[in-house]
Length: 300
Figure 1 (cartoon, rainbow, N blue to C red):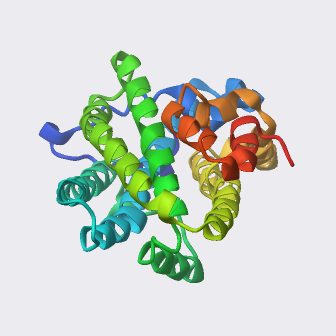
Figure 2 (figure 1 turned 30 degrees about the horizontal axis):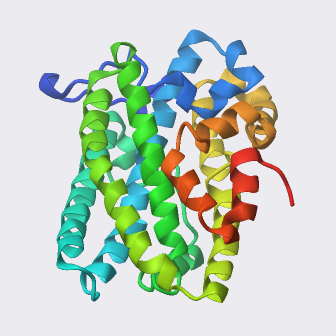
């Protein structure tokens, strides 16, 4: 590993030392693992890619909890909902804040990239950030955000269990954080379901249809095929391993091709990874198109 790698791996105090000789997350949860190119990388390159992708994985969790949960949950805490649910949402919001702080702290222990910023691989244009801020402050107009939160929270349960399944192979700090996150996510999925049961049936049919179309687009664009942020992970790897530079296009093209990779799509959205979400989609006919798109990749 060349000198660029040391920029990403500061030497923390011994008590907080991370083991950079180990994987940070299960290989099967990383996009490049599902491409032909992955097997042609050196062991050192695969290890470092895994570690970089784990930082991005942590960013994804922080992004949802900062960009969505804070405003959405805050809105419903002020709404006319059953007091028991509002109490649960307050706990939900508090735990999401704690999670964001823990994932950021771990990323900062791993890399100087996070000393002055919370996100490195995820970069939202200012216009997109403003739009998301507006949507998250008006969740009755955009209840698709509740579905998105439920979908991603449930998938986090599956991913957390995979971390524990392979924990003997992984860096202990990453396993410990996922274990704590997993314990809280069970309650979060339950509160997501209660919110949806309160809000979605009261949403007009026309607004439901509009929101489903928006949800399909968001999942296609940002939460299925590896695109911008995943490509940045690959570019960061190439910065550390200059011998990979001639393969830049090959690696990025193979990432893009995962959109038609059935195994990879099942990892993201399937009856195994998000069974409750799938069952709820099946209860509402307006989700027929979404089920075909995200669970099979079929075009309509």
